Image 1 (cartoon, rainbow, N blue to C red):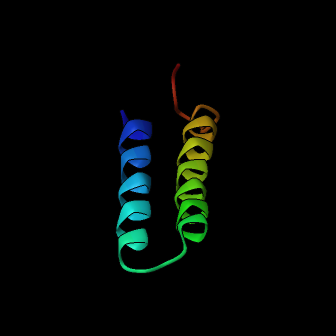
Image 2 (cartoon, one colour):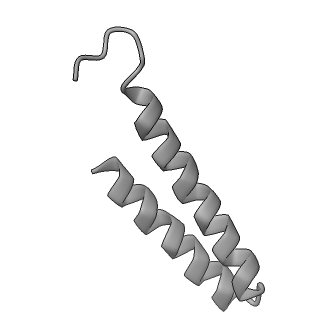
Length: 53
């Protein structure tokens, strides 16, 4: 669920920045960075101590 919310937030940031006059590619790269951080945290959360899978 968290990854879906992160992806949605990244795409919202992309659309908002693009509509405010930023270059489309620059805004897209920021959205990709947000999504990658969310995916990385989700993968790393499995390896935290006390976390059962």
